[in-house]
Image (cartoon, rainbow over all chains, first blue to last red; front, side):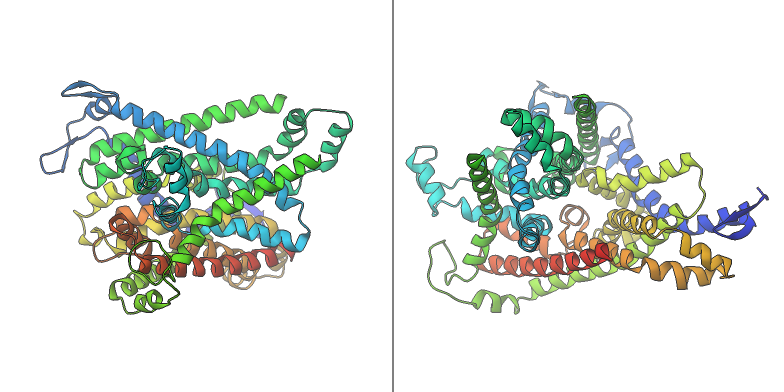
Length: 301
Length: 266
């Protein structure tokens, strides 16, 4: 420990250097320990506790909350919670997929613009990225309102009854989710598309390859780094989203985020809320793991 | 090929419309001269003027600003020290991996889980001190917790890009540790610190979930106010408020972009 070392052109003992390093690390790490790691561990503990009559925590350790999440209640088995969990995975999956499909043309379009206007188009994607999600969600109220042409058109085709709005509905949730997360995919994807080598695409075209093959072999491998960041940036928050389903789905299309919020809000059942959070965490991590495994396979292509 | 170009362009324009149509609708109806309904009744700026006479909204705006400024200042200091501590010292590899993991936690966990964890933790801390009642103090702590990670990541990438040569040269010329820190490292690092602080500030203004879970009745911020309002009834005044928030966002984004752009070309 008292060995002399040269670090950055300074001669000092190892002990002294480590002490100085700890001085820099401690405040920030202490903060993250107290308010991030410790609360996380407490949340895991609490998920095994119970709820008292007044919403207080009761320390009877057991799997009751997880059983309830799996659908076993006093009235027998129901699929309600499982349906909501699976639906959240599905919504996150569809949102990510459609956001990717819409992002590619957008990125190609921006990348081909001359330098000056490219910057402006890029800003057009960055602004929604930073706009508050409550505003971006409720703004769909207006577009989907019964007075506006979209709802009237839908009423014409007998999709909805006349005089009704297009929200709350599953359709509105998807619409809100995709527009919310599109910039989260498009921005990282663009950083890859911008650096793409287009001669590979041209070579593939010269060799009469089909459009699908051009995309799979010349475009996808080159843009995969940005795409991966975008997919993760979208999928993880989309799984836990509760503003969009709350405002645009109402009670008609609940997601796991709403379920968690209910337990910490109106129902005041922290223990069950903690158990649902654990479920969400496991599902998110599992999906990311699957994605990473699938990606490794893609690299082999 | 021409066909594909046309397809790409149409889809890109369609997507842009998809992103902006709702926001433009909000701005459009914020100058509509009617209290109810969505039919056009003429231009007015009344809703904007009324905004500035609404005590609740002014208080919410003030809370939002206090929350963002205080949390940004603290998280920037903590995050910068953390980044220097992680990058400039010879830690064993295992410890580096562990530090890295903790730093990435707020980035990869869904924010609702962080919010839930904070609610439970504050519930316990409340038994020790009444400071942890739901309210501005709790919100500031919550915001700092996710901001620290982002600031540290931004500052660390700047630390790596400026390299260690200049600091080593300073040491060779007998600079003391505090001289090195205040006169060499921090000035070199300043663009990274400012970029990190701006990111933290925007994240705080933008946050809804953490605030929603930790707020008390006295500490309503603008996003919370808008959320509560639109769940009851959507009024032109909310449109006006949202348009103003959007306007501030656009300005902030431009300032931030200008700055990072300048940083990267240097």
